[in-house]
Amino acid sequence: MKTLLARLTLVVSFVVTPFTHAAWYEVSASSPILESQQAARVRALEAATFDAIRFAGADVGSLQQLKRFYTQVKPDYLFSGNAVREVQVLEEGTQGGNYVVNLRLDIYPSANACHKTQYKKGIVLTRFPIMSPQQAALGGIYQFGDDFSVLLSREVKQHAQSFVGRGIANVDVSPNMPNAITMLADDKDAQFVVTGAITDLSATTDDSGFGKAKNNRQLAVNVQAMDSESGEVIFQRRYRDIAQWPFERHSQVDTQTARFWQSPYGQMARRMSRNILLDLESSLACRASKPKIVSLKDNIAQINVGRVNGVQQGDQLNLWHVASFTDDLGIVRTQRRKSGITLTVARVYESSAEAVIQPQTLTGSIQIGDIVTKGLN
Image 1: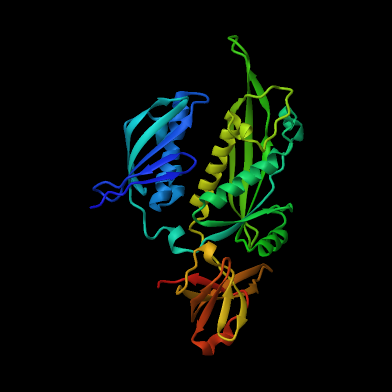
Image 2 (image 1 turned 90 degrees about the horizontal axis):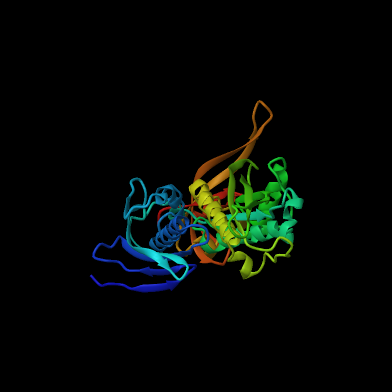
């Protein structure tokens, strides 16, 4: 068996070497020692595992099930019911202000993982407002809500397996505005709308009596995701963390600079955005992708997913008719019925594709808005 050595430059140093067992990967990662050596070790373990999972093609959302075990200092971690079966710590220690780990992981990615069997789903974010602007006075970080939205959008764009980022909308929506959610999703070609708010930016002073007092600052964020079709909240979670605020109390801090994002507080915010993405992956990856037919001409149907969603020429698609009815309680409900019509992708564009309808005689029964799902080729 040939030995493959590949070196990639990511957020962390990353080396992959398959050994005699094809499922083994060796990775290296480092984390700055900003607060404690133990915390830096945990972050380095998480970073290395994340990169190994992505490289292996396994479900990144599964990392959330492993993280709590990394708080235990052990040379070896065994897992069950996860794509990651074993993590061996080959080397670890401090180096130049960083905590460096070298891991060997046994990973068995599933061919039936949802991000492999479905097309990527569009997701659009809204800007995260600061609920108490007076808390942003320290450092003058009144734009931090917008910057955090951009940070999360970039995380989705670079690392999401199940989603295609549709950018950040400059409109305010909430679960109390289902029609606005549907309109926004249609405008952005998104299946999910993610909203959030910064609920706590308060600061405290840690004065232990030894040397200069340190300022610590909270970051609390509420996040919710809504289904574009119904406006229903399908994901809701609160995140809270605290980190050292290393800037002078009366200084104005530019939250768009590397100096801010490399600080203990900036790095904590980056970890939180990564955790939000992983939770979205874990919760929404297996929700059915719902590409729609947006145009019909002769026996050619155009769908609103394309190369960025994972569509490939030759893909076989199943067609579902969509209809609505009002029940006895006056509630409008959506009904889907699988048809005997299949479509074959003939041409793929960046964000759309053309598919040939088979049999052609049933073209007249297809309507704009009908849904297609990825079939088995």
